Image 1: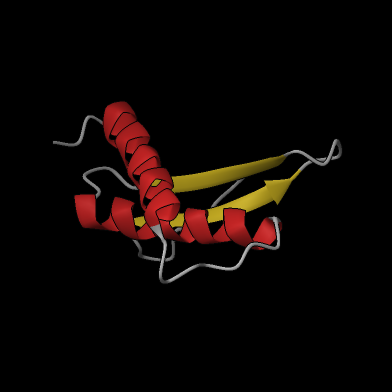
Image 2 (image 1 turned 135 degrees about the horizontal axis):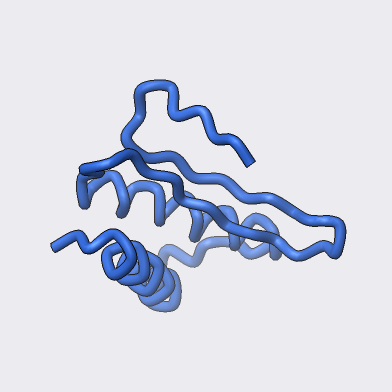
Length: 82
């Protein structure tokens, strides 16, 4: 897969394969900012909800926050961001 960054330091997306398994992707440039990773991670949370026909619950968003935190931690671990 080729991802065109178009001047951004991070981008996200999703890809459904022939077995109907979805991959969620965050692509980053070298020296990506922590805020860009968090920004793209929120897009991934939203992609996941969209793909499962889930509606955000603005009165009880705790599970969304935990999922967002987990995605950001995985990115920081892999990218060795502070």
